[in-house]
Length: 184
Image (tube, rainbow, N blue to C red):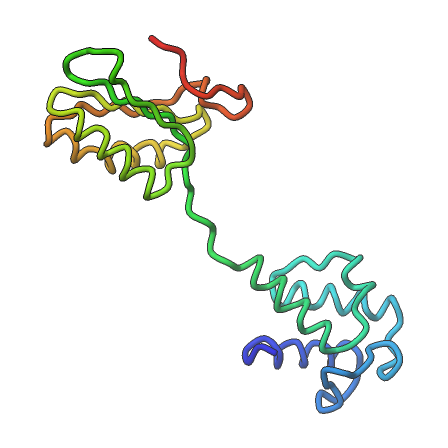
């Protein structure tokens, strides 16, 4: 049990069920040992939601029988609802056009822009040489922040002679199921 959450859960349960906090142990049955009925459990769930800033589905409360189970549910919901947001990993379509304009040496990549993919795209652009162009397209719903971050992340290539373009394109949107933007 969590060192920080369990004492808080204990206080709320003791208060709402009118029991001594010392009576609460992991194996204590909320309904059999503490005589809590469905209304008591619902009020307890509401109090825990308010205390911890979580949402406890009614179906979960119906399945909680022991105090230890209740603490585990609160801990899991608290961890899930208060976890830091996952970083935004954009979906991109990238095309490297060589300086000599030969179409047989155009490189294309599409998918989530993981660090490995970003490094691979940058390597492709550098190998194409000075005067090459890197065109990156993202879905139309990509935020301005993400679009700017992508442009900034690849801006160093311009100091190496590679032109970089990052733009939104409807053809990259997952809803259109396009694999790459329409050629301009």
